[in-house]
Every structure is written in C-alpha cells, then in structure tokens.
Length: 451
Ligand SMILES: Cc1ncc(COP(=O)(O)O)c(C=O)c1O
Image (spheres, rainbow, N blue to C red):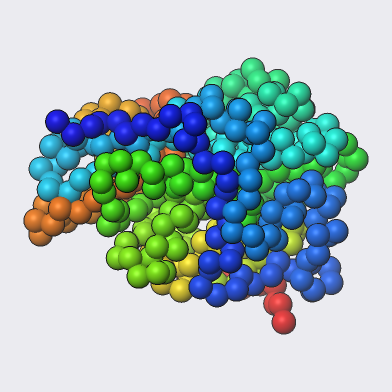
C-alpha cells in the first residue's frame, strides 16, 4: 500500500528561503513612488517596513538564510505533511495520482504564519513595538496576531467588515492572542472616515483595510505595517512550502505534471510553485495553474498595468493584473481571494505564459469542497477549495483520457471558521457572481499613468 502521508523530520525544514527574482524570465517592473513618479528606493519604504524586509524585497540573491529564531517557531507545525488523496482518487475513479500539501496544521490554520513569524521577527529585531495590518478572511490577521504574541509585539488588525460579520470567531481568535481587531472601514483613520462618509454601509474591501493599516502605522513612530501577501518578501517566505514539497515528491518518487493553487494576492500559490517554476523554465513539462473566483477575476480579466495597492492611494504603484484600486468585490465567501490586484512576480509569470489562470464559480467550488470533505475528511477553507476544484477537474480529465498524471494541490488552510459559508451552501443559499465587464471598465478607466 502506498503511503498516505509523506513526512519529513524537523531537521529537514528548509534552512533558506528561495528568492525567484534572479530566475524570472524578464525583469520585474520597479515599484514607483506615487508622488515623484520615480522608482522607489529603500528609504521610501523605511517608514512602513523594517530595513531587513526592504532589503529582501529588492534582493537579487537567490537564497536567503532563515534566522534560527524563526526556524524554532516553524517547528511548531513544519515540515507540513504531503498527503496522497487515495480516497478522493478512488471516489473519482481516476488514474491520476492526487497529492495535497497541507498547510492547515499551523496554529492559525493556514500558510500565513510562514511569513507572519518572519515579519514579526525582523520588526522585533529593529525595535518596533506594534504592527498594523489588514485582513480579508481573517487568516492573515490571525497569523500576524499569533506571531506578534510569540514575539511580545502589539498587533492592530483592520478586518474587512463583511468578513468580520461573516466570521466573528476569527476576531475572537485574534483577541485570544492579544490583538486588537476592528471592522474596516473604521472611524479610526482618515481613509476609513472618508469611505464611511460616502457609504456608511460599505462592506469594506482589502484595498480600504490596507489604507487604514498603512495610515495607522505611518502615524505612530513605534509602529510598522505588515502585508500578508503580494510583496516579493512575503512570497519568498512562503517558499518553505514548495521546498519541502520537492523533497516529499522525491520520497514518493514523483514528478509533478500539474500544480494548482488558489490566488488572493498570490502568496500560498507562489510559495508552493516558485521552486518548480525554474524547472519549468529549464524545460520540464509542468502545468502550473492559478485559480480565482469569477467575482474577483484579477488574473483572468484584469489589466496588466501599474496601479495602487490600496483604495486611498497611499501605497506605491506596482505593475500587476488589476481590477482597479477602487474596485469593491461582491461579498463572496472566499474573503481571502477578494483583492483587486495580485503579486507582481506572479503577474509577470502569467503575462509570460509560464503560469495559467482559471476563474471559478462559488457553487462549483463548494461542491468540490464537499466532495473533498466527504472523501479525505478535511474541510478546506473556501479559498483553498478553489484549488481543490481544479485538482478534481484535472483528475476527471485524466479519467477520460486514461492519463496517469501527478496532480499536486496547494492546500492552504482549513475551513473551521467558515462554517457559516458551508451552512449557506448546504441550504442552497450561495449565489454565483460573474463580474460584469462594465464594472471592470469603470474601475480601470482611471488607472495611473507611469512613463
Ligand atoms: C486559507 C487561505 N488560502 C489562500 C488565501 C489567499 O491569499 P494568498 O493568495 O496570499 O495565499 C487566503 C487569504 O486570506 C487564505 O486565508
């Protein structure tokens, strides 16, 4: 009988993060200062990030050592297991071999602490007392609260209001780790007050919550800001996932034919697939598939253009696929996938055709999540279920063609705080949402011009 869980020992946790920058097939467009229109220098970012992270953001070194203190904390849940989905395969009747790299065993329940712990560490090292951040689904806010708790830092979390209401126990979890969590837009910041003045019932968005967290950090000398996705250093911290996966696939004597993950800002997906992108660029035949909701189809229908990372235009301009920084996505249940942009490194690879993207409807995604829960047992987060859905679709294609492909799903987190979403699905109350082209046109008409 082939193994179900492919495990590594603690001593096999990667000692270095992989930085894809030097291996990208084209240079990354530089982030631009919104005031000067010039490429950003390290000093421009110093008010919001510690210098060690700014250096990582711009680094062209292929490998960066993971500090011992970060490794010690990683040991609470790393290496994460790679599962072979035997029961799912049997249920589907597919000749494909399906694997899932399971990041749901971390204390907050997702991949997010892989970077939260690293970011809290570097902030602590540079004397920061408080970290401000935003959260969509609550997974990132929980991860940062957990990391700040372990390093004795204060955490201030701006949680998108619709998720705050959908998932009250995520807030309680953050508070249990000692954080303060607010439903964004709040009246604590100028950015939040401006939105509330226009629309007192605003459901919020990640773009708005980012504006609030950046503003709160800039106004406090003892605080810095942290982002849970999109930026180069965040994606790099997540590569521990893909580096472990490589070793686990060796043990299983497998080469991946398909790697699939969901994309909110791109961090779990990149963490899993970036160590394989180089193999693909060197000629290996691997399909790398990014999935997203039809309600927020950034990679499949967005415009590849410079845009702000937030609604209030406080962040630098970055070149990415974007639906426009004023875009407010429909309140679907995969809160972590409702962001108007995506990571520049990932967008570059999509624009070059190295990575493909698919948009999925909510009902199809929840149907796949139930199939997974009823065969493998684990309940995926609605975000993660996007990856599961395409994993199942590809396995069913193999059933038709008879191909014995190796499919690897990035299993980014569990859905234990998403039971209201599952309840809505089970009672037939989930609606599909296809973003109208007029909405995309309206939100992208005024994208900032960069020479
Ligand atoms: C479980 C889970 N998966 C995926 C995501 C999407 O984020 P990213 O694209 O940065 O991995 C989130 C975001 O909150 C999440 O909670």
